[in-house]
Length: 440
Image (tube, rainbow, N blue to C red; front, side):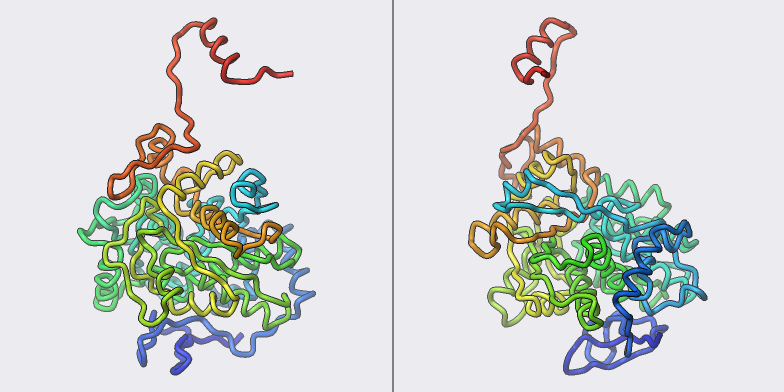
């Protein structure tokens, strides 16, 4: 399949070799994307092939990314080894209690926390690491508030590459940092915020030959677009009315839109869903731009306890706004209290997630209340990470100790305080009789 890197700027559209180590267009500075001129797949036959691969035990077919490799034309898997940890294969989970809380008749979560390192980053990192090997790179790096570092460290180590992680000093969940350390990454805590560090690392990458694996890397986006391919496969190719996504660096929404555009062009689907991006109130530059347009204004000091989306200058915003506009989508923002409460409600469904994930349900609740989203809409919300990514947040919420970045208390609206009881069967039985309905 023909493949190239294409500038996403409509006034430029310069093309480059798929083997060039580039993240942005040298001509105009815009983001690049992998492009496959003339890519054409026969929908019925390809859908059957993808479904049949679920029965194969080969590593590449067991991957929920590489199973759909016809969509990933940048690499010939017969000639180049894909770096896989059996990523993807994430479930669609019905959540009636969350649906009721969100004002919907029904709601389904696509839970990316079931990935090998516990987040959606694995879908993109398998492709990024594969391209790094293809290019003959030895060292790879990322700037991360948590999930990217965990994923990159795992995939780089699995590929025999050296992972180097740059992260904001003191602004990372220990649950995520622990993964990066365990997977053997050289971890550098920089006294700056995410956006400042990314600018620093862009310079270092050019000067030292390090391959950058943040979402500015176009091959990360290629892997993440397969989340939508798998979701459609799981739904027997019924397009939902809405897909709701947390918004941080905006790589996911950019990838989802690209995947849908390609599938629509080839006849796999007959329409786009409406996309909704939900940001945290203290880190919501994309929400502000969506409503005001004009110049994109970054948030210089982004704040939110949902560390995965604590990003004030998202590099993928030009791609993301195209997806929102093409799909008649919306962008919203939610408070720390709304995120915390929504996370607790998701937990009551037996479905755990990281704080950033819960922005989806909090946003849905606002969209239905405003009449933007109909109660009977067919909605898929993306949960980006595993519940164990930030266990301190959970404990503090349920015990009434959670506070916003400005130290305002967050009420445990759905708190579940652990109880201390004596070593006394009678007293415990009395407590159970009072607190727990008797079994039939």
